[in-house]
Length: 111
Image: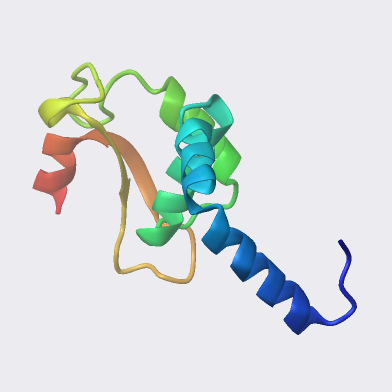
């Protein structure tokens, strides 16, 4: 239903969310399991953590296709100390700051 008044639209959306909160949460849980949901979630987390890159789609492709740590060459997996991490320079906040794809151990060691 189109609204001419933006305030009425906001109110309608708010009421819909309140009435359908469980339905929305279930949809979001299911979406996060899809490939596009995983990608969207990863990029959202990177941005929240301050990772800056000129093309997040490219970074995600690099991230998903990297199989070994750029520092110690260990095999990367999704658990324990060899979990994949996007290493970035925290002091750079206005330009690209991604350095490598590392295992958790090397990322913590690098600081």
